Image (tube, rainbow, N blue to C red; front, side, top):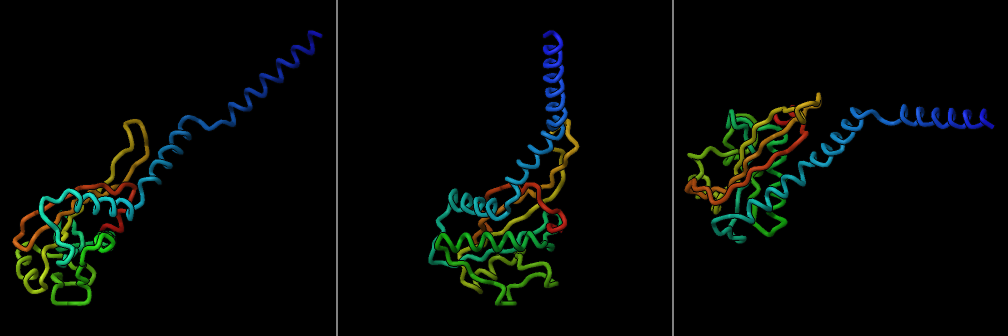
Length: 196
């Protein structure tokens, strides 16, 4: 009888040991939680659409849905003559979102006269001194312009995991170069190469 009790106790202890050994280590659980959180934040389309909604939702000036707006490529804050794949794609998302809200968005890829950059790979962005001329030439009420900065940071103080992010600043600027509204947002866990 006593032998059976010891055997039962021994088997129970063995199963507890095996279960504990098979359970993920705290480090693995932390890694899984971080990766899961990062996946929720990687959607550049949703984050850019939400930023566009907030930009137009908190504008201090009236944006007329019957007057065209030009959306320019987002540019690198350190070199405003340079854009990137995601800088250009972000401007496409902004333009699409504005159109979904009923705003007239002037398509500028069709007209080369608005192209300010020297090379085709850098996008259709506008330097501030040219806003008035381009606004008059294309009969627009204003422009959506933006800048971005990219970097890497640690996810917490005691972790080896790094997150890459782009800090984006969107602005609506009228043809007199006056900011009517602005909104800043972060694109987390992004591909830094696509921003360069």
